[in-house]
Amino acid sequence: MNLEGRKIIVNKSSSELAAMLKNPQDYKDLMPDSLQNFEAREDGFKFGLKGMPEIALKIDNVSDKEVVLRSASSSLDFALTGLMNPVSEKQTEVQLLFEGKFNPFIKMMVEKPLQNFIAALTDKIEQL
Image (cartoon, rainbow, N blue to C red; front, side, top):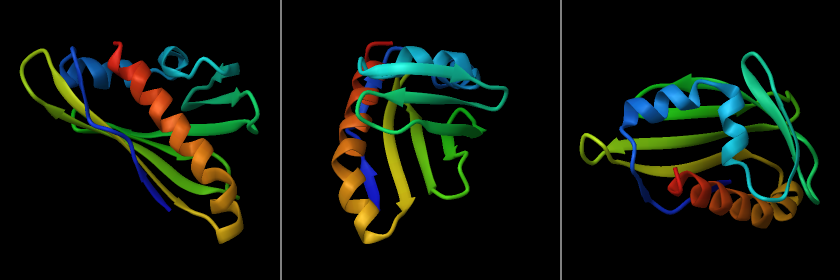
């Protein structure tokens, strides 16, 4: 299952964004308003949103071009990637991509909430 967020322009350089996204605690500011709990860890974070089970993510890769977050659970195989393309010295185009390997039943249950989550994350990133 692949989902794409809309492309946005952020008023930060790609290196500023990358520096911020290396820090697990900084992800709390990007979470949707329905956030119920957030726990930063050494290599990632765990969060819970209203009406959804808790999700644990590990920060897999951060560069000036992309950020890759992977599921910290062995039972779920997915990645959330943020592509960063510098537009100018102080602006970066950002797009979120979700790629998950789910069975058809799980896909049917999570597709809409994930699309909403990606849209909410995109909105928060756009406000940076």
